[in-house]
Image 1 (cartoon, helix red, strand yellow):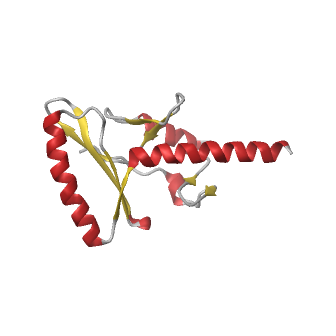
Image 2: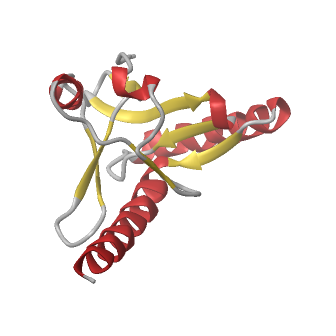
Amino acid sequence: MDKQKESSYRKRKPDLETESLRIWTSIGIEAKEVKKLAEEGKHKIEVDCGKGFKMRLIGFTKMIDEKTDQIVFAYKFKKRDRIIMYYLPDNLTQENKQKIKIFMTKVQAIAGMIGYELIDAQKSSITAADEAKRLKKKFTSDYMK
């Protein structure tokens, strides 16, 4: 499993926070650190959010299939929010789909027992990208007034 370290920007309050998003603006050393963190690792997770926009998911622990050398499952605990974010790639083999289905049933049961919510990181990323687009339009139109 591939574990990445957390960036220093996470230690401070977000620059913008909505119900579903926490956004930090990183400049200087932080920006370089985030870029390096996003580029590290052999198995990157990118979510296509539509219209050519892709979001890179970082900080996830990844499970790799030894036969295909591809991600079969990735997860990230967000203790503050009592959330387990998970990622399932679209290109799973039929064999891995069956195994992951059994695994996810057990994870859902355990998460419920310990009071955590399971969130699909891929769907969440697409929703966050849509919200970010709306925020950008709002701030741009407010700035132009």
